[in-house]
Image 1: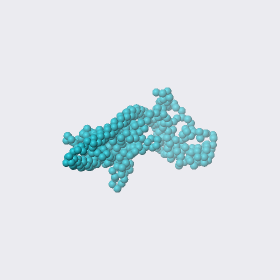
Image 2 (image 1 turned 135 degrees about the vertical axis):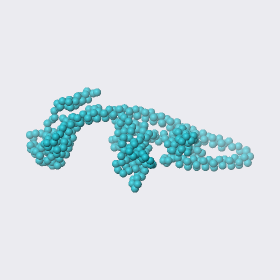
Image 3 (image 1 turned 180 degrees about the vertical axis):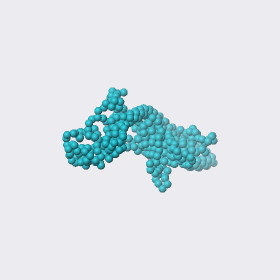
Image 4 (image 1 turned 120 degrees about the horizontal axis):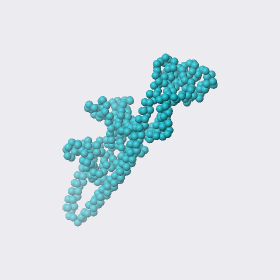
Length: 420
């Protein structure tokens, strides 16, 4: 722990434990940052420069300045504000209309100096609780940031592995295409020109029938591909195959990933369909995944192909990052699409703090559903809440270590939370 941090904590403890701290004198209701404008025995100039008055007219319960700056400690000016020093806690401002209204707004009770209200100074206790809360938040941020570093390291290694795998598969595909072309060339050059005319005609007829059969097979395969491609994105994912149990080879009621891979097909130009279990939903998925924006250091890559659920009294909400958001009734009913992955939508200085999912299922006589996902720092990856602030527009709160920033020192966290 740094010397500066130790000194800060010791001074805070001293102020809370002994009450020995000295408050710098200034007129009631004036913040420390504006004390230099309120010098006794000198005329006071309104902070908006509208007029200058004798200092004894400051806080005399009569509003002389248009901006209300001559009455920081009374309720005389309707546009005035009162500064609560709140030593031991956070300073704050309240409207001057709340001064001496019988309700304690400042934790140090200074707003009720002449109302007769019974108030207790709760600043030290509130400050203690806030410092405990800030300490906990600092620890969470620290642990989350360490996890983020691991995620970045794993993402870098994973991206390298995926790029290598994609390069290998693309090479295999090219080799397969070359092999098919070589076989076709051998077949064409191997025809015996001296065969009997009958054999040539018979062979040609058989070949024609085979081409017709292959064309029919290709058409059926293409139709089947379109049927399996549920989201019409140009490729069939493992999840899409697994939703068609009629393809189950062992009739056990489910399709394993291995069973789906042997049904993957690729189209070669001007050729028949060739089975390549190593490429589709592998090649296309790798290309798609490598092209995603997973953050400045790919720290969000671990969320890809994962889903996180939140159960409420009525619904089960499901967030699949970089894919979709859905809602399903707990007691029967169909699933509702609340939006498909759109883009990062945070502010310019914090782009990766918000995810936007749009083009969801249409509302009755309304727009298509959409979901905004706000990301906050946490040690765990979990959906913490969901709501519908406006019709067909949903809001999710999602914690993940991927958004944790390098933690500030405790003295920076506490800076500005106390004023003496």
